Length: 193
Image (cartoon, rainbow, N blue to C red; front, side, top):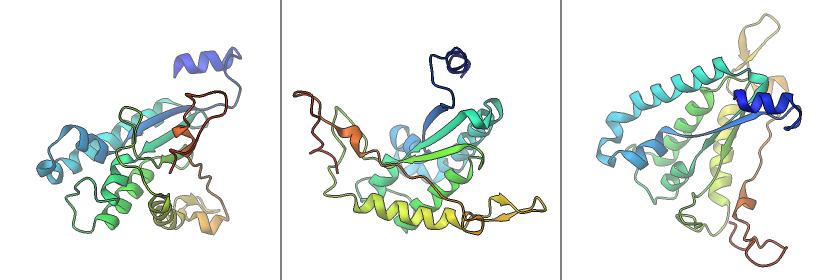
């Protein structure tokens, strides 16, 4: 962050640009490093540590300078039934966990979710036939977070939701990251979901 801030202050990075930190969720950490039979045991302490790290980062970097993104390929793989989940209702479990991750980030920090299907060797772990499942996860998460009481009212009490404040949420698709630029100057997006 110090290097970013110095470059921005010197004009090498445009004023108003935020320092973006992209993080794996607890599911991603477990998927990559812990055998599935132990996920139930490890999830809670791992999630607590991850959220403590987020809190430390948010305390160290001014919120006006920070953007945090949760990368969610493991949640999408659970939703799609490709990777195991230890919880019985997979779709509800995925949503509950994503909402907790979102809730760990202060409302004054810009937040994003990267709906993706991963990239191993330039290929997704599964080529989705369309974006229907990304839209379904997005809509379920948006429904939950729109009702979270995370905004202060006139008295300073945090009891207002995004819906109560008339606020909005910015959702940006990342599908263009799959652009194939191997031939010529016109990228092909045929591999995008």
